Amino acid sequence: MQRDCPRILLLMTPTTYRATDFLRAGAAAGVEIVVGTNRAQTLAGLAPDHNLTLPFDDPAAAEALVLAYADRCPVRAVVGVDDEAVLPAARLAAALGVPHNTVESVAMTRSKILMRECIAGAGLSGPPFLASCRMPDPGRVGDEIGFPCVVKPAALSGSRGVIRVDRADDLEAVWQRVSRILETAHREERQGLEDDRLLLERFMPGEEVSLDALLQEGRLRPLALFDKPDPMDGPAFAETIFIVPSRQPRLVQNAILDAAGAAAAALGLNHGPIHAEFRIHEGEVHLLEVAARTIGGLCSRALRFAAGTSLEEIVLRHACGLTLPVLARENQASGVFMLPVPRPGTLTGIKGLNEARRVDGIEEVVLTIPLGDEVVPLPEESRILGFLFARGATPAAVEASLRAAEIFLKVEIQPPTP
Ligand SMILES: Nc1ncnc2c1ncn2[C@@H]1O[C@H](COP(=O)(O)OP(=O)(O)OP(=O)(O)O)[C@@H](O)[C@H]1O
Ligand SMILES: [Mg+2]
Image (cartoon, rainbow, N blue to C red; front, top):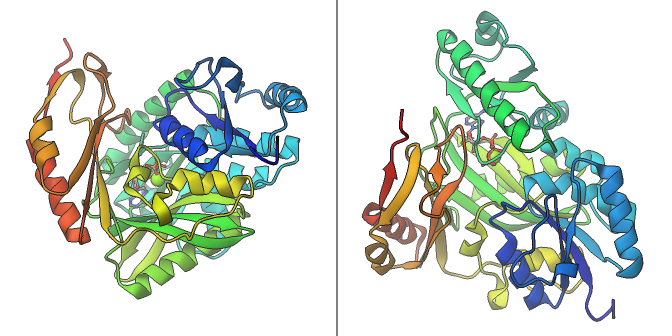
């Protein structure tokens, strides 16, 4: 049974965007998926006995539950889907004795501070930084880091709590704002947020790209290099457009792959997916960060590999040692527009969907926040209103389709009552 249909424990948070795509991929790969979440939930399409509730913040209890489960139902691999799940996944894989990155390496990716220390220690290029529980003296920041700089919490994601500071006089207000965002996050979720320090690093100008790759016994296999053609200059950093293939020159692309491989090696990552972000300034490649997971949101839907294989299927197949397809993306260009929340209030409508869907090149428009929900923009919260997907002959054509479609969308938000 195990040989015919390997079983994978997929760890995710209940709020993940990624469940549907991973479950579909499991079906396509012929893999039995058991989902472990940190709060009780039953995902549509999964039998209740395929849902485990695991306390991500209590590793010993989670381990006992999974070992007992695996005694009855052998588990071939553990895959962490979201940032909050990758560390519990590494711990549970270690407990089960199935292949995975070491717990130490994944722990480093979960703290932007530990990651910076490791990357700098290995002599790789990244911004100057300092980490502190209290606001550092603005004069010291000016001397050691320089303005503009960026303040961010150690362990949030989706650009939540990441704010640019232009002048020494603004540092205190931004520091307090980021501290409040971290406190709120602490109340919502404990796991992975044990580090109360904030990270302050030099603002790196330049174009931003992200790389998804697979590590096979430490060897980096690139899967997709996305350009992010919207300038991300702050003060908050909403990620909007992602386009493949990258239009960066070949030399720069090679430098990105080298930097990603070197960063993974420095961190000790050698197994499974990574998602790495870089800034390119005057031809130089600077690492922003590396995560031991695939790209977030629904963005992976922009990717199709040989015979229509999805990114998730590649990850699941690799995790349980099944044959991989050729790891080459389709020939078409492809892209996604993540719609940020523009202002706080109650979401009452999004008009222009039909017009947006009719734009040449647009393949899908998916809304992800129900009408009636309270929404808060970045940097306080990082929910995405929806995703537009396009394909075309060239990256420029895809970008034009996405921009043209987005113009049709009129987001209606009723302001909060004072
Ligand atoms: N030092 C920096 N210089 C310039 N821009 C930065 C810097 N640090 C962060 N940013 C911007 O802020 C964005 C979010 O920062 P970062 O990736 O560190 O946080 P995150 O919350 O993990 O993001 P995500 O989960 O979306 O990857 C980056 O994609 C980048 O645009
Ligand atoms: Mg990031």
